[in-house]
Structures are given as structure tokens and as C-alpha cells.
Image (cartoon, rainbow, N blue to C red; front, side):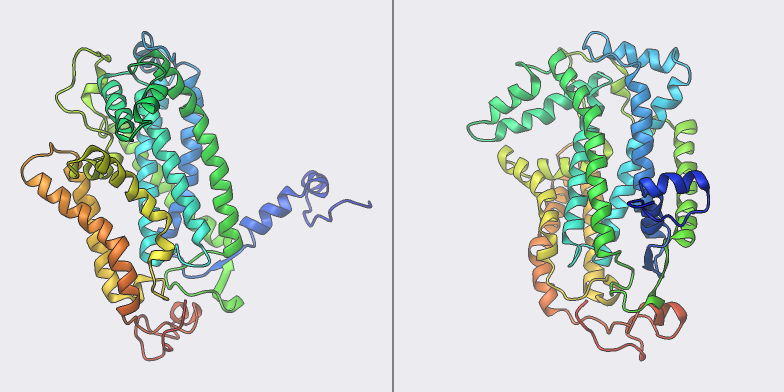
Length: 421
């Protein structure tokens, strides 16, 4: 018929739909025959794991919202009712609660993989920046979700974090009042945090869609950091990487199941099982573990405004990273000095996490300041200078040579001299 899309599918139902709305053709093109570099390792699983995790969080969140009451007098009890009286409520809540931690683990590994293999370099700058936007949205969503149980740590965590905006000159106090919906963290705060916590995951879905579109336009990076040169460098996404991703997804759900069934409160704070009390401050106010490095940066600066600027700057620096790294080579496999400095960055982030979990006193203050100093030096000073001074190892002629054994990995005699990647 004139005007209908020509579908290649044999199934009559799928063919009928596809001729009128070619969604199956699009899926086949983008996730079936889509050419991908043949040398992906298991670190490339984490993008798919993040999407699976996002779906899990949305599905469990919708079911929790059906039974949650966003009222400061009833919120804590409604969570207890979910745990005790709602059919499978304990499972849904524990899956959602531990799924948040798993989500950040997956995304942090995904980010550090991008840093190691140079996935932020041209032409994938916008792809990287969209990923940083997703991280920011995740952090906002997680923070607001942590407030919803309305326990002691929820209440006081919300009070401390929202008060950070008061450090902004002139408009800071007005922003805090607007966030609270009044002059203290109370029922209006809980209501707006619940609304935003429910809304933001769907915003994340929209940004993830743009992230995937940008990925499919520029193509994926790979462990060698060199571009695809011939069809022999690629394989179809299906069945090769759908199967490989399935292995990673199975491992992910095994780890999540171990947490949910055997250690559901491993990442939880005991104080959050005490109802919120504005008249009693907890002995320790500590954010969730995935915020600890940023919390450590905040506390490493004696000045409140300076600490807030440094904390937000630690994320902002990632936006401009594609232009800070001046090296023409992507992958750390061919950058011996950068590879060592990358692991120093990883150590500094873990050190900041440990500092954030302890009181800002004694040796922890010193470690926090040194780790904060190195974090910013790495991006703002070391990368721009190192890219001009470092002598990378020779790059392989193509992806196929090392994969098929026709070339030796870094610096092999059969590799050609360094070219701009």
C-alpha cells in the first residue's frame, strides 16, 4: 500500500504494526544490527546495568507511592505499615532502598570507566555531559528520597543539606525558605520532596534517552580508544553484547538479592528507624555513603561558602573535563603516566569517602584536605599539563589487530606510531 513502511519481519502481527509505525525496525537497527566495536570488556556492561537499575527503581517506587503518606505526622508510620502490613511491602521497600545504593555503585563504575578509557573526548563531549546531568539528577532524587521515611537522619539530613544554600550571598536565606516551604523543615518540605522524588526519575528517563541517542550518533568508545576503521572492527550488538550484558545483569541481581535478603540494612542508618524529632539532634549526622566524598570536600574548607562552592565545583569540573584533558590519546592503556595518576584519583575519592564518614577532627581533617587538593589538581592542573608533556605508547593500526592477535598490546613492534585518536 502507498505510504506504508516496508517491513522485513515475517510475523504478521509485528509486520502489520511495523508497516504503520516502524518501532520494530528501529529497535532492530539500534539494538540488533547496530555495529559495535568487537573488543568491549565487561566494564561496558555498566551502561545496560544502569538502565535496568533505573527501571527497577521506578517500578518499586510506583508501588511504594501507592502506600506512602506524605504527611509529617503520618509518613514514618506509613513506612512501617508498608514493611509490616502491605503484601510483599518489605521486599519492595528493601529492593528500592538497596537498589539506590546499587544504582550509584553501577554509575560510579560507569563514570570511572569513562575516565580511564577517555570516553569523554571528542566527538563524545555531549554524551559525557549528558551523563553528568544524569548523575546530578540521581543525586537530587536520592537526597529527596532519603527524606521521605521521616526518621531522625531523614529530618536532620534535610535540615543540614538545605541549609547549605544559606551560604549564597544575598539570596541564600530566601532559597532555603523556598526549599522548606516555611521557616523550618516540616510538612510542606516533605510534600514537595515527595512530589519531586516521584517526578525526577521520569526526567532521568528523558535525559537517558538523549544520552543513548548521542551514543548511537557518535558510536561507542572502546578499550583501545581508537575509532572504528573497517567493518571487521565491529560486530552486531545482538546477539553478542545482549548475551554479554545478560551475564552482567544476572550478577547484578545476585548481588542485589544478597543485600535484600541477607543484609537489607547494610547501607542504612539505625537513626532513621527513630521517628523524626526536631528537638533532639542525632549524635552523628552523616549522609548516605554515595554522598560521603562530596560531604568530605564540603567540610575540608573552613569557610562555609567556600566549602559549598568546592562541593558543587567537584561536579562542575566534570562538565568541562573534555576540554581540560589535552592529550590526543584516549585510553589509559597507552598513557603510562596518566594511568598511575588515574589510580591516585581513585584512591583520593575513596579517601574522601572515608573522611566523610568520620568526624572532622585529627588526622581525618588532614587526609580530607589532601584528598580534596589532589582531586582538583588532577582535573584543573595535571590533565592540561600532562596532555602536552606525556609521550603515549604507539597505538594499534586497528581494533582487529590486537583482538585477532595480529598486533601486540601497548607498545608492540607491530603497532604504528601514535596518531591523534
